Image: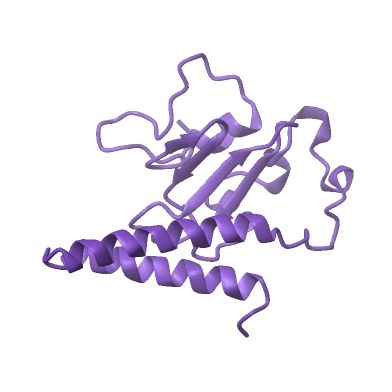
Length: 167
C-alpha cells in the first residue's frame, strides 16, 4: 500500500478485484479509494478523496477503451481527485494511450452530456419521491433522510448549473 493509499478500518484495501491486481488504470484508481461499491458493469461509486466526503459522491467508470472517467457530484475536478490519491491525469489512460492529446481533450472542455445529467437528475428525483412518500405514510423524517434530501437538491442544482441553466 502506498503512503497516499487509504485503508479501511478492517485493514483491507479499499477495493479488491476477485482476480489479481493487473495495474490497469481502473485498478490503479479503485485500489486507492474508500467505500468503493459497484453500481453496474464497469461502474463504481466511492468517497471522493479530494474533499471531506461523508457519503460516496464520486462516480467512477471504465470506458470501453480502458480510460477511467471520474465525476465528483460535489464539484471536484479530475485533477484534484487523482492528485489526492497520488496519481496524475495520465494514470487514467491505458499504456500507450496515456497522452491526453491522443484523446482529443487538449485544452478544450469535453461537451456537456445532457443524457448523463438527465439520468442523474432522474435518480435524485426518485430518491426525493421515496422520502416524501415515507413522510406521507406518517414516518418521521430522520436526520439521514433530511441529509439525503439536501444532497439530492444539491446534485440537481449541480446538473442544472452544468447544463448552463443556473449562473
